Length: 401
Ligand SMILES: [Fe+2]
Image (cartoon, rainbow, N blue to C red; front, side, top):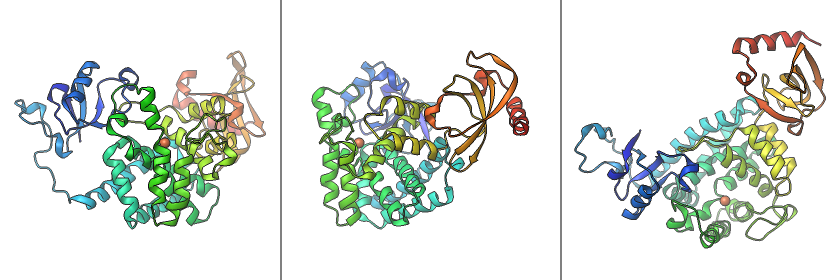
């Protein structure tokens, strides 16, 4: 349970999971952090933050000396939790379940992916982690140090596992992909807290420190006796920030110099970071992120992988209103290849290039509707439709052609 708390009531050791300003207004790197000193509190006040959101069940988050009972709505009895490792494992399990639900919703996986298999693989990945003390302790570190990295890593694991399944890789390879994705930012555990959680923009020197996390991750994972962690996960950790045009780090490698899993993971990594909802900000829509990647990242990451990801997350399900590259606006009625959103696509065009309503809707077949041919998507309300009208268009449209 989360609760609001005035900044004045904050104390050292408390865990903050949100603030009363949007992410853009604060310049905070993360809105999930622990108060380490009075200076942290002063910095929040100086930034104009008056209220923060705290996790009431966090042991350090009991408001000491609160004279107003109304301000303290933390549970009267905090359930006794097992200590140490077991508690970390419990958190891991609980978080994974929540993240799984969230990731399904965010990426609309149910329209495009074999969800039963994904569940099975994630469950197996977690089991493998539970049996692997090295991985568990590393995950626990990430969780303790930076909730956002943990959430991001777990979400990226789900995407990577789904991506591997979609490529019909053997089950063991799917698990390897999942492990590599889950551990790709492990090097952040070695970044000093004052840099990782600095509530303000990083200096050039601090960015240089942040940019060490791929190499630090590599060094950590190379120590593992687990061959998958030692080999693939370590390589992916050091390569996931490389970019085709040499703007990446640490080694400025091109795409053909990195492992195929790293090539895919760098796309999934950016996609997850931009689409994910955080406590303090709403994620960008999958459609916008795919568009952004195709427009602005073609020279940095693989376009082929962006398009494969677009197909995987099923970003244009039946009933989606789109503007095609001709400028016309219509609604997707169906796909020949329903599962992959590929093949011929039947579109019910309703507006011409000038956004003028057509006298009569026109159903047409588009041979291969790739994301590149879609200029943008619309919410039906933007076009003045009601849910009933959308239903009617969907059923009447099927009769056309
Ligand atoms: Fe990273």
